[in-house]
Image 1 (cartoon, one colour):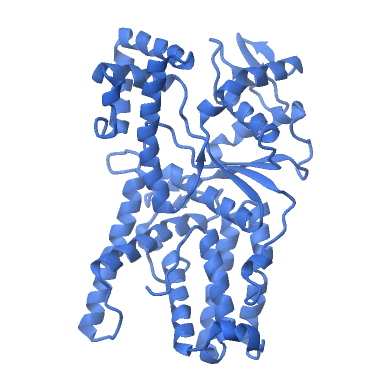
Image 2: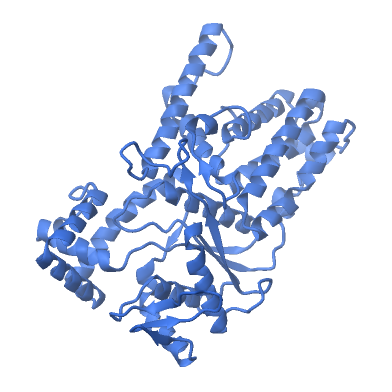
Length: 479
């Protein structure tokens, strides 16, 4: 592992190309704490698959089409007769703009009629409406990208509008197969085992989520040639995806057996709860904005870092004196890492309680503790003054002490753990392994002469660094 590189330990999976559909916020609405889970769970799954030499298509299926755009565009024309004047400065708060437009839609009959006609004109491709739609999407996109940059997440946007042109021929093909029936004026597919049918064309002739998701699934299987399509959304959408996948099996797009490929999987996750045990919200019962949550994690970590530095100076402890800029950078890395790891370490199917106090704790199973452990090991290697590159060719593998052997055995399990986490779509499996690795490592450097075991220490750092990467966390050698 140390000589040939950890990449040579990547597991070999039975797939070559995978679509991971995750994050997927709605245009004109801010990303909230619910998007956090989809974004970081999806990113971790994508990272593990990429490490396993799988081609991963990271898809951001944003909500950029539908009735709400008629409302937004009509309100935009009212406030800005010249569409060229529209930018993120003019609409500084797109969320508030959406609420204002929705209120007008609900209370003004004439405005409601104009908004409904605007949807038809947008979908018909009229340039004025397309331009307004593009402007709104671009403003939202810039806000989303700020969040993705903070989280270190990369996605390729292919929203609802991208799949919209494929819907008619997909519906036609399903109809020609005899799968679509008319039920109460809507076009539906009856799925065995479900009391309600899957509506694919509404009574008014419009399309819905099922129409779009079927078109997206068809595209991913036939155009992108994916072996595995993974959807990361909350558990509340489990039934919807079960029905879509069943319809795809009836159509012959997917094989009936669960263990065969190509296949589609829904990666469900539970709610984020507040410390009161209820859905995590602000004091005014608003959904918590993701940008505010990340900022608070950074600010809390910065305050703690400054306090620790003051205490060290007061006690006369010789340590690195960090500049304000360095402390800010450390607080950002550790704060964001704490938020990510607190989510990923839990089994995704369960609800979890969001607690800054617990996630920013420097002891226990937290990102903060793992980052400190990593920095401590890096410090040991630096103080040993051993040439690691030279040791790769001249060093010998001697595991005499029981704690040294236990650490060695645990390091060897890395590949099988990543494989298990990939195939079961459970990043928490990797988190469990990572935490146990840090525990074995602590015993190792407490009970063994670590400076004489630079090879073993370097192997540990190599695996820890890769674990951090697979979880989307950036470690620092000094902290």
